[in-house]
Length: 143
Image 1: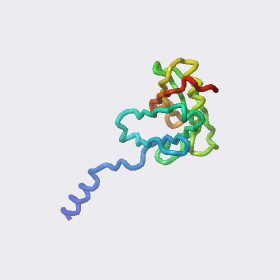
Image 2: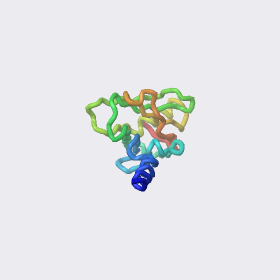
Image 3: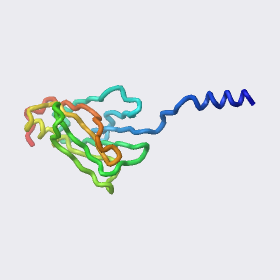
Image 4: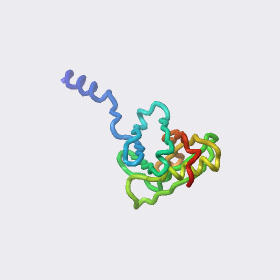
């Protein structure tokens, strides 16, 4: 009996990190990165260049496997000012999509090529920064 208790205590002493919040970012249906919030080691970053001008960014954020309610993707500048917000109804699919050209228009208005991608929802009202985005070689792009 004592051996059984020792084995049970040993098994339950390790906490499982399965589940939890995670997110994925796709560019034209190709995975850019996937991150699990409990294992995050800093903010991910990626670059978009002129060849991505007509591309689509698809973002998925899962709350323990569930899609959030009242979801928003927010683009902020380096000073944490909101530049653009995309709102997604609860009835839409699990992916939230935005066009890269919407970001390039922000670059022209704000003369900056670095942005922060945030997610917020009813389940995560304060939001979470998902990634830093750098736009490169967009100087000659016209909307």
